Image (tube, rainbow, N blue to C red; front, side, top):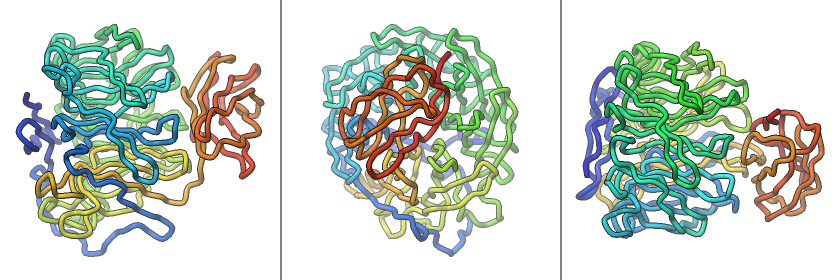
Length: 502
């Protein structure tokens, strides 16, 4: 099975490189000219701690790709690898915050790979406590799957794509307020340019939109459902050949919100996020004032503002370049992300820089937090394609596509890392919106001795399920706002406002 070419910014084509006999992965190093790097090293600043938690070694997986890790109800982190494992077609893994990794499942374990293989995207934690994801290959027809897997590692293939209904889903799924899942496929559909689909927890799939090239193509990113109930997404190509931002209703009404033109950005690989101010934020892998990518803000009405263009100083990429990963809004309100190239260090396998971790304010002020690949062999990893995830302990977690252990070859098998920047613990809700009387799961750390839960100041009845999980009922009279949990050690606030549905 072959994986599709991936167009870079301004119509260039990323080179692909092979990992083993049947696996290809992206290499954007040939798409950016080699430049002279700044000599000042940028490492974790004072008060910040970077740790490599896991170096993959092939047998336990290799090449975690476009995913962002997700925190489970037990407080552990869950993710996928695109390759490796006992079959070579990737894994689902569980990781404790301390770095203990357990392989939960090896893809292509079933005859003819009917369970799917090559999980490019990450996992979604659904309201039932199970995880949902996609594979870009395998399944009954070889065009990829949608699957469910329990925290104990029991998988169920919900759907196998056949081509006309979509092919090669790359992005992470999103669970909508109606309980169904929504996602995208990279290609396939009526025009071969990809689709947007809805799938029920029972596995009934409906194609909502078939891309046609003009309105976008090559969809790597999943969707985000905004507070208005509409989904928003990006296409890597199409429009003016620089990519687009689109919206689509749950009923399938599609609108192209914005078409990139190069100077404002190009080739958005990553999904959008909706920030607490209601606007959407994302990255482009190319374009901007220097063609090394951007961070942008776009309103639900389609007004785009470029917040930052990478490599603002000619001849120096110390602030990073080519951001393929999505942003995440931290509990402090700032946005955190990663670049796949640039930074203070370059090496044999990342001549254009090994990537960075950064923070950017809503006003566009960027701070480089960490530069990857400090020593030969890149023990701390390189090529960050997946986004950061902030766990409820306040720290961020992420994956490197390459680097770490060299068992997989000179480019390494990839890593999992953590970055602490001094942010306090918090709680998060699942889901993030519900009606009065609905059950809501609250995730956090050290919740055993909780004495109170409130929704924007209105007290709620609750049950402590474990040290990392509470179930609460949205109380009568509750209004939209922060959820707070009172413990003996202090009050924990939710990382984003909870929306009470009328």
